[in-house]
Image: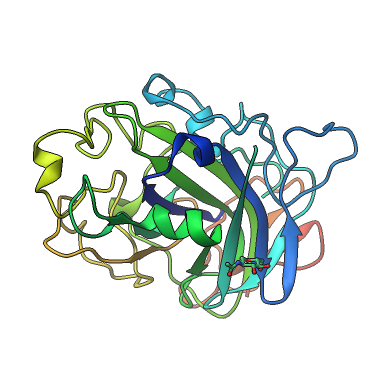
Length: 297
Ligand SMILES: *[C@@H]1O[C@H](CO)[C@@H](O)[C@H](O)[C@H]1NC(C)=O
C-alpha cells in the first residue's frame, strides 16, 4: 500500500485555556469530513481521521512513543478515506474542549507545510498558532506534482507557552490523492514518527520567556525541511532560524521505493494478496484498478 504522509506543523503560542483540542473537521472543496470524536463511544464511529483518545497534549516524555505519530497508540483506520486532487487544498478545522491498514511506521513522512513565528519577537510576536486560535482553520495545498495514491496526512500544533515544556497535538487522516503527478520527495526529506523530533532540538528545548526570546525574531521549527513538490528537490535546506518568517509547504511522500525492482507498464504492482515489487517503471504509476488489484498505468 502506498501511503501519503503529510505533515503540517504550526508552531503556536496558545493559552492554556484554548490549547487542548484536535482537528475536528477536514474540508476538501465543498465537502466536510468529520473528524474522530475522542469523547464519544468508538463503537460505530467512522472517520477519515485516525482514532485518538484525548484532547490532551503529548509532551517531551512522549517523543519516543508511537503516539507522537498520529496521537494514538497505533490504532488503524475505520475504513474511510477522502479523495483529493493533487494541487487542491485541504482545510483543517480545530475543535477544542475540549491507507486503512497501515500505521504510518517507518521513514515515510515528509513535510508539505509549516509556519512558526510570523512577526515580532519570540516572546511577544505574532505566531502561526495565533491565526488558528482566531479562525480555528489552517488550509494547505497538496502539491500538484504529487504522485496519486493513498496517504496519511498529519496535522500538528506545537504549543510553546510553557518554557521547556512544549505540547504536541498531532492527528492524522486518510487521503486518496488523485491527479497525474509522479513526484515524491527524495529520502533527505523523509522522517519517521517517533524519531523526527528530539528533546534537544532548538525548537523543542525552547524557553519562550528566556532573555534570548525577547530579542530573537525567528524560530527554528522542528522536523524536516519542507518539500515543495519538486521530485528533484535539493538537499535539505537550512533548518535553522531564518531572518524572516516564511510559510512553507511540505509534500507528502510515498513509501521509499526499492531501487532493486521494477514492474513494467501494465504489470501488477499491488493488490489484496500481492507481495511482489511495487515500483513502477518510469513514466507509469501504481494505481488501483478495482478494489483488489493495482497495476502500473
Ligand atoms: C473555518 O472553516 C469552517 C469549515 O469550512 C467554516 O465553517 C468557518 O467559517 C471557518 N472559520 C473562519 C473564521 O473562517
